[in-house]
Amino acid sequence: MTTKEKRISIIGVPMNLGADRLGVDLGPVAIRYAGVKSRLERIGYDFEDRGDIEVVRPEVATDGHSNLKYLDEIVRVNTALCDGVADIVNSGRFPLVLGGDHSIAIGTIAGAMQSKENLGVIWFDAHGDLNTAETSPSGNIHGMPLAVALGLGHERLTAIGGVGKKLNPKNVVLIGSRDLDPGERQLLKDLGATVFTMHEVDLMGMPKVMEEAIRIASDGADGVHISFDMDAMDPFFATGTGTRVAGGLSYRESHLALELIAQAGIATSAEFVEVNPLIDNKNETAETAVALMDSLLGGWLK
Image (cartoon, rainbow, N blue to C red; front, side, top):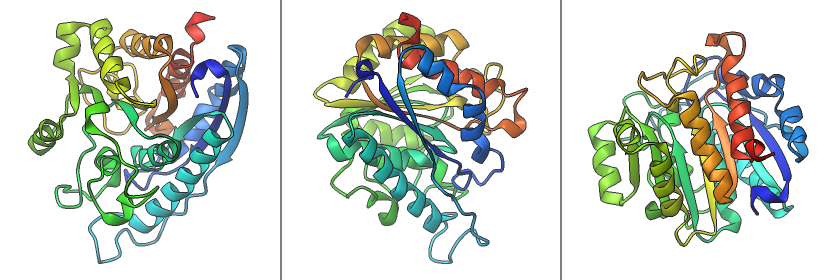
């Protein structure tokens, strides 16, 4: 399905376990408070809110068998999210997931892939999110979802949605990267994924970057998932996010990127993550996230 069909369902995932940082679990309620329902209904969407997936914070971070924090609960939540996203797609609606930290992309992508033979991904993020238990110094799973979606990492994470349901790196595009470690850079080269760092955004301009990103992500794909981490933006435009890195996308660059995706009509699922109202200014980052959703879903055309 594409966004043109005008039926959308949201699921909130109030989880901070992947980041192990308070506040990002309040992202879904902050986005709802910022008016996502009225904004999308105003541009003509049949809007359905499927509520939040329950998240329980365990007393102990690790179980002694892995350095991955809150692995059991993150697996449970992402499995439930996978099922929820798959059900939305099967009902002929567009799934829009509200984070929560970026570890929820494991479930979103797994759910989207249940009905896709080859899903492309455009990943807006300051970071690569390509760590595994072996490479992560923190054990925070929000730094691992893209690796998991590519079939790399802990077997309990890669099993979510089925071990055969993984991304083809040739259809994976990262945009806005500016905090990649050497191992992530080498892995991206080895896999053949495409990265447009902020250097390329500055050098090429956002229209050319998106022309290439849309072409690569959709080439031979039967759908494209959009994953937007608010830290892709420069902290000046997105204060309320937990892992800020200077020198990111501007407000208009972000909107233009999503407008061009809308114009191409390729998006079949999306998520917006890492909104943290505890460190925000008057819910401005959640309001920005809602405005970006509007652009991705074609509001600028109305």
